[in-house]
Image 1: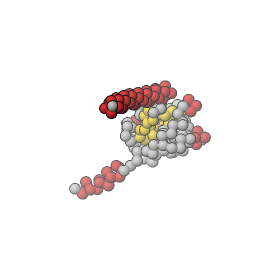
Image 2: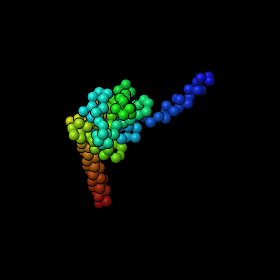
Image 3: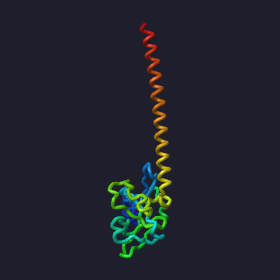
Image 4: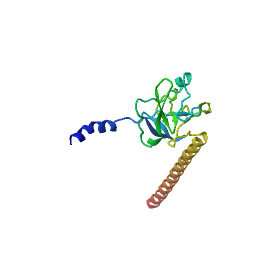
Length: 178
């Protein structure tokens, strides 16, 4: 029983840990990786699996997602794909599916994706651990447009039905008044 009580604080603190990487989404890109505060995470096509090639000015514009200890997977994140790599300065950078993860300095609010496709080498990361290419972004936008069109059509149909019912009721009221 004492052993169980000693383990309790560790269990409670583990439940209160903010995830290092989680999944968010928008209508343009669909689902993609973000940090625990909702800031978008990117991959750099000039990196290699487990190796970062972004230092100096690059790292000023594209700050790496760093951790002390092990990264924590949030909802929708495959914990088996989450890892780390050591940078040349000894800092530990989070990786996903082998790709080192970065922020973009021009993203200022959670969910911003200003860095998508910058220089055709920076991309938002999908929950599958791959870049979200322009075609996928366009497909997500088409799907969102189709959903909006369907909603508009339903609204128009409902409005026409309501108008027809009101016209019929007014006609019946006018006939009864005669």
